[in-house]
Length: 139
Image 1 (cartoon, rainbow, N blue to C red):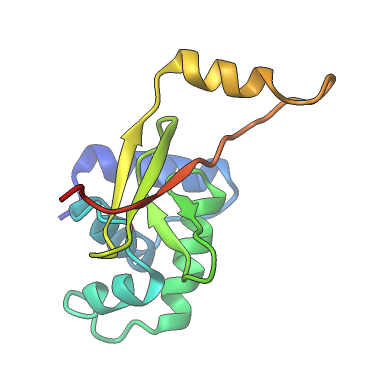
Image 2 (cartoon, one colour; image 1 turned 45 degrees about the vertical axis):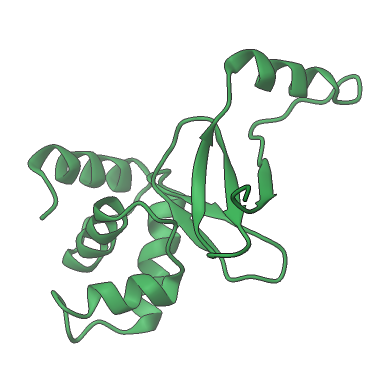
């Protein structure tokens, strides 16, 4: 169940973005927070079906779009793979384990993000840095 604090945060972020809180948005946000494993829309849909059996996949996609738009979750994209969703809003990278398919958050020290921004062409600034690693656990 989404906590009162998370519910207020959700409602405030949606309101600030010109959207309203709905039971569907709340349950989608809840399942993303419960298991922070970077699920796809289809995985979220499967998890949401238990508490809300009448929800459609289209509604889940619309909820995800709203949550991304208001800044409560981020989209994580890997080449030739479905979009995944991440509730970690701190600056971080992702590690994609190619053997298991799992996605892990990787903390990035602030000095490293500063150094990455410093290599941009003169006059450019990066609002966000999307950094991902691919590989597997060493044997």
